[in-house]
Image 1 (cartoon, rainbow, N blue to C red):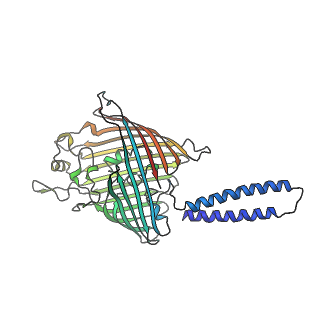
Image 2: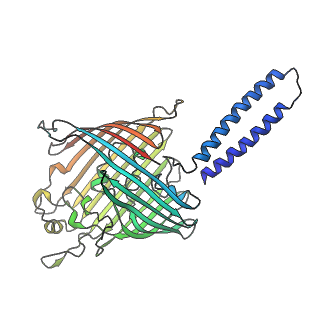
Image 3: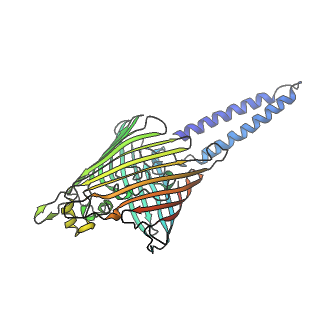
Length: 429
């Protein structure tokens, strides 16, 4: 809709320019003819510029802007919401090179081979049946040979402010689980907190409501819960069922609320609760394994400055029982309490110049502990209490394409951290 309005405005400007140019060119010769010629030349220049803009808008009405999203989804994932009707196709991808230090932080040889990975190539396919009904999906080719369905859902608008959504859904927690297109986030890799505690990319089958006003945005879903059989001392990521023949003995509820009433500012919180044992028993007794995840997040993005912060925590009831069911003992056991947080900042140093591209130095500091507390009879692995400092720069020749170079300093309580250089190429369309 916005692009359609821009096209209309450009056409109006073009019509006005033609009219003014015609009037300026029909006057009789006079002493001011030189100044009239200058004015005509200026109008011709403006006319040409408007014509170029109009052609660009006509050719690019379906082009995604990297700073635009709908209902919390990434810019390319939001594409179907902007088309008038019919098919919408978008996508994103990233390639990552990792160069590891020869030594761990304790001076022992690290022996971690460098690697380069065609990490993701994504195709978004959607179809807008009407102004109230649409389908949206994300199909992912990961590591060049693994194909999976990232999400697939149907939206139906009950009113202008409330809709119902069903299918395979992205859990609406944190930043990256819904906004994971490389040009959208700073850093060559996703934050560790949003990998081990909020297990990005986390999607399950379910149904729920979404909506909002000019000031608020919200989502609330009922989904199949985790499979606790995949948990371990490193966090919750292994418990994702990814919608594939998912066990649904235990369901969960995920919800999110954000304040979006001030341009460039977002403040919000999200959470999840659900049992995870999926009907398993230990010594003839049912195990619940309830998991609670929460986060609070904030972002400020104005005038080239990008600030983002997130704090996330999780608790696991009956962590000892789940650990025994999973054959985990000692420091391998599931943490009963987890906590992680990070802050990051970036600034476009070319913001005030005439350059059309962006150059954004950034820094992110993060602390994560997936065994902040462990149940009786288990021990915490100091390697799971870690700190990651990321320093780098992102260059965007276009808002939809990014090249990032970064250095990560890894430290943990076991002194086994291995630093690394990363180079990432990412895109969306």
